[in-house]
Length: 75
Image 1 (cartoon, rainbow, N blue to C red):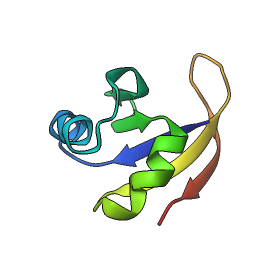
Image 2 (image 1 turned 60 degrees about the horizontal axis):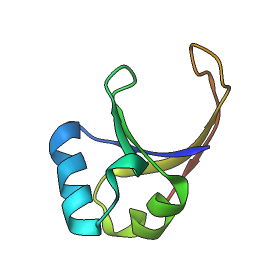
Image 3 (image 1 turned 180 degrees about the vertical axis):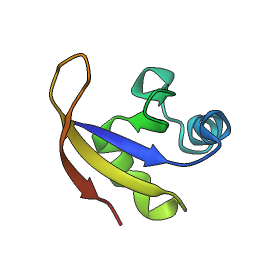
């Protein structure tokens, strides 16, 4: 399971999240292939209400294509 944030300016938003919410860089990642920011789910659950972006907790199969099997919207 992982937290995801859907937004357009992924790199800018990632830098803002790291700076404003003190998220360690090893708990956040830009996924250019799926066009989203991936965040540790426990971190995203704490901050999602403060963010103006669509936030979800997703579960994916651990395969090469990372098939998404569940998506729960936060907020």
